[in-house]
Amino acid sequence: MTTTIALANQKGGVAKTTSVASLGAALAEEGQRVLVVDLDPQGSLTFSLGIDPEELDVTVGEVLLGKVPAIEAILETDDGVDLLPASIALTQAEEQLVTRTGREQRLRVALDKVRSDYDWILLDCPPALGVLTVGALSAADEVVIPLQAETLSHRGVGQLLDTIYDVRQFINPALVIRGVLATMYDGRTRHAQNVRTAIAETYDLRLLEPPIPKSIRFAEAPAIGRSILATSVNHKGADAYRAIARGFLDG
Image (cartoon, rainbow, N blue to C red; front, side):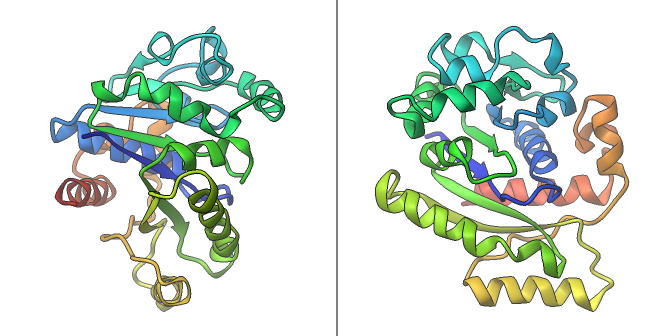
């Protein structure tokens, strides 16, 4: 069985990309076959895993437009995960998808052809609720919502939940919200603790444990083209992602 998880939040800067790269690497450490998919035209996940988006001829954009099958765009990375990369060309692909038939289903159809090769597929959604994010939610079995533990960062959660509800109602009724992943978390502050509690109570969402601690190590890792699990092997942030990944494996 392959499990596809979309990490989604229309707010930028909440560590979606970091979480996809780190969780993918953590699952790979456990012997799992992992595909991570970059759905952000900025190509941040692609860059973070050591691949220059500007040097790519084939990306997820061409896959979504039906020009090439996913298998022809997938790359191996040094973190033990496979990558379906993105580049700025995805912006043009997104514009073209708006008028294409089956635009919400194209990612699911493309991934179905490689699904049997993987245990886990992790989708890095862009910071928007447009066609790319809706396509990811349509292709996913589960959603994880990365969220910075600050008051302003969770103001858009209700809008995201509305989008998830619409996707469930019209496209993907089996979609499940696995929970909220608190990132850049400073457990020493009462404010961060209160925000986490408020999110769980306001939206009736499960809090994934443990929260991911705030650290400069996360910002340093992409410059090396690896996840924090490779650049800071024994760091508490790396260990936190390993714990989340084990939770995935335990169900």
